Amino acid sequence: MTREGAQRIDELRDKLYEIALNSSKLTDPHVLRISEETDRAIVDFLLKQQANKKAAGE
Image (cartoon, rainbow, N blue to C red; front, side, top):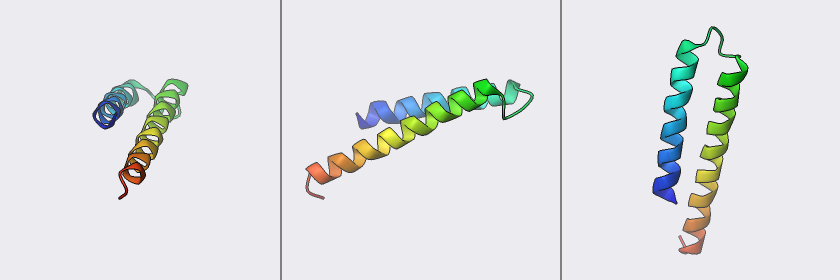
């Protein structure tokens, strides 16, 4: 999951960057939606990473 999660975050960041550049405002609903989706992906990634470390006994 770690590699897939990191790849998903990178894809979302790229998409966010592109949309933000082409938007007149950073508060555009489309920009905010992608930003929130990116935030959720980052939190999910970190939680899974933390769970994997606990399961491995680190």
